[in-house]
Length: 566
Image 1 (cartoon, rainbow, N blue to C red):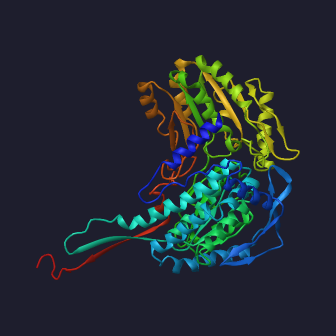
Image 2: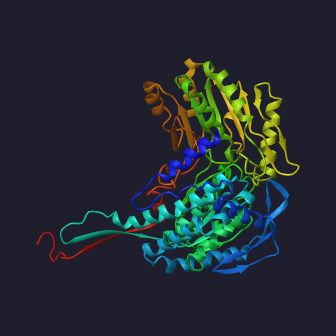
Image 3: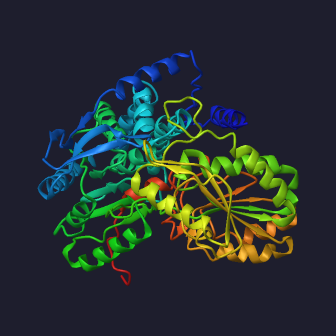
């Protein structure tokens, strides 16, 4: 059943074309194909050794004695990479290097800068495709399909589409009059951008660091500890594509140390692009406020928070903070029970529920609950949990032990909670990898934490409501502090039109009769509001303006030579 949905996804991308850029086609890794054989060869080689990753500042490699390891989550006794944390001296060196490089880099015209990222996109989708997929699979626990749509397709899409939109900025100009020329110039911003990246999308890591640089900025890039290897591959690809030394500086670091170095720098202009938890983003805003007198600009904060970063301190701009994403089922959708269940399984359980857009709560009318429940049970029995090296695996381990323990605690609590019933799943095992079985939990309490707080794992909470309580459920959804993605399944046009208006502020990405995951660059620009982020819509023409400092210039060809009263 899931192969059909995958094929539909492939066809959707292949047939969507653009006048200036097109989405990277999803390759089919069937056994015996050239791409399959190449991927398996690279996987085996990458899996056979521990890869040493340096700090990179101004093109030079640095190492410290603060050694760290990136584990393979499906086999946590094995390390994928060895890296080291930058100390305060190296972080400050990276900052000063980015500031210095930006001055010359920003003078290069946008077309020339874009060419570098377009070449990088070609390297991502060609020469280094198998390497990026292999790293994302081993290091971040993605299946072949999930790694393909992320590390190859979406990353290439980000660089190609954002490059074109950046070049098109100069076409947006104000009105000029006879003898007066008015122009806007889209400059890079003074100082540097700090990019702090999440583990769950290789493409996001490359975008958060790459797009600010594309627009003429200097960048200090702090990769996630649990995706440092794939991030390292990206910086090497950008260097091979011709990115000048010092424009992006690759600085793995302790989160708190990195955050303090950035927010307490005196006399340097900076901006921030990050993904983190709400608490971290709030702390960041407070630290910026406490140090505002030390800055020579007002830092531009853009970002998003992800639940999994609990004890780290991140800084970024362009903020997308995760969500408590919903599927809302109306009784008029009874003819689409199969699609509802398939969509909900994919949204909730693909990549073990570790997508920011993953569905984690579903509201089902009581008159449809029994057939939907039966279909869930039938479908979830077919979902295979296993090692990413197994081609038949549908989902693998969660990213690390902290994530496993947090999710396992919630499941264990639900098992003894009189308000909850485990419908499917509930088993966990971290003896070898951080494995959590896809779990469906019904709760009788419409305000239960499982319906309110993000777990960032393969757990889907169900609330069964009476059909005449539709308006009450919509009001309940509206109370959420999150507003990232949401879906409604409804075939009553009147109900749908009214409900869309009532739900308008509950998401940044809204889907009708479609799952809440799977946004594609150029097709569904992505971002959330409320505590889910600053809704900057990555993958849209408006996104690139976030990284520019616009200069407005008026030129007069016939200056006035007399006073008004003369």
